[in-house]
Amino acid sequence: QVELVESGGGLVQPGGSLTLSCAALGYMQATYTMAWYRRVPGNELELVASITGAGTITYADSAKGRFTLSRNFARNTITLQMNSLKIQDTAVYFCNTDPRAFASGQGYWGQGTQVTVSA
Image 1 (cartoon, rainbow, N blue to C red):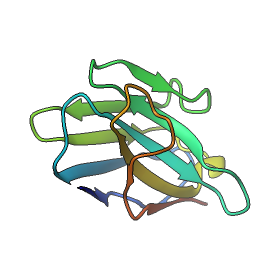
Image 2 (image 1 turned 60 degrees about the vertical axis):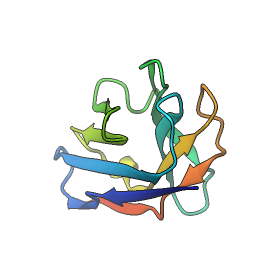
Image 3 (image 1 turned 90 degrees about the horizontal axis):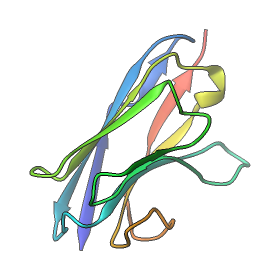
């Protein structure tokens, strides 16, 4: 069983920055994929960024050039640095870890952290 503890959400103005962090507690292997997803009310869950156990990082088109995902394999943590935030980035962000070698939308989930981008 894996527990994911998220932190770092909040309110920010357009153009601002936020950093989301996620720590995986419990039994987790370095081969697991870790990822951030987000959901806007009424919309489907969207994969924002993921990093595999091999260190391969994938970004959604909406995140490319603005978000940076990093992982500390020793501590089982990931960090999503979000810059140049837009109103459209407003969502609940969920940390995920997946035993698969890619972000499949399954596995373990955090509780979610709200990110609000508003003037």
